[in-house]
Length: 446
Image (cartoon, rainbow, N blue to C red; front, side, top):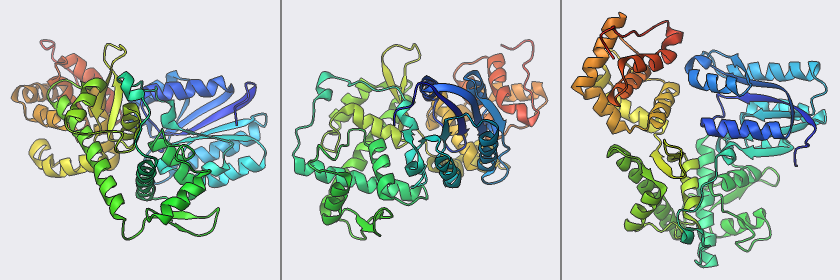
């Protein structure tokens, strides 16, 4: 369904469930506004832990609804109450834009559908409740609003000439990964949901180009080859993985995992050397290491990179001078951060410090991405004598004896990257405000 130009719409955004980077948020909001007249735009989250995003979304015109993160589903409950209130007081609204993938909104989505209003759903498909998109008039993957990535070299735009049979087997391995990702996210890989995630993680996938008349025919072939199993009758069919994988699946999966691991390693090692690698540089390094992106199922190098980005392995960003060159940065998962902290927390942060909660591990990971810092570099800043001296002096001047791990990490990164005391204090203070702590520099410092 194409949004009507004259539609009156309202936006309800579950930020705790769905978010990305600033450029994506701007592009998504602009696309929504282009589809009609926005009556209300709400964003729900614990804004104490998202100060910079709060400022960003406020400038984009969202009303920020603060929901303290002290109990499960608090944001969902608050957002649902706002939607129900909106139904009563704004009956002229023709389209509801729900930015969430939480299954708690099934009843709300069903109620909107019964009222005959349009529902535009935007989410991260991997963590979206399997049947939620089926209730929407229109669906978008939030990552579809990211800027497109052009081919690195003209030859990277050429269509793969590998055999149709191999393409089918590679696509079935990709389907296996889709099933695994959905299960890992705590959802059931229904037939329709799996297709949405398949297109999200593998942008160039098209079952028709593989010689199938439909998505279901592709699933049937994958099942016949032993890649997946289908349980239950349509439309309630759920995909599962067989206990024993066919030998070809094991081989292709290993090749694909190796390619993604080398990509992540290359991005991280380049950043650790002091400079993030450009897309071109990463492509050449992977080629030297024997990685052929076409052999692992991608017809273009850009598709391979986008697929890795959507899996949360890397981020593709413009350079700091905002020219046409894109760079590739590593992304640290919560699991990786958890492991790193468990290994280093006492040595680097002190014996009294505990491993941060997952929400703060995610914040630290995001901070590393935004400051273009690797984990090894963070460790170096925490151990560096001069950086530590500057940090201790800042705390002493402020009359503060201790900062939590996130703010402590942020301050060390800023100081380690050459920010002045005043610059560091100003930026870290935005994160300390909810704690009632204010950092101050001495007049002699800068």
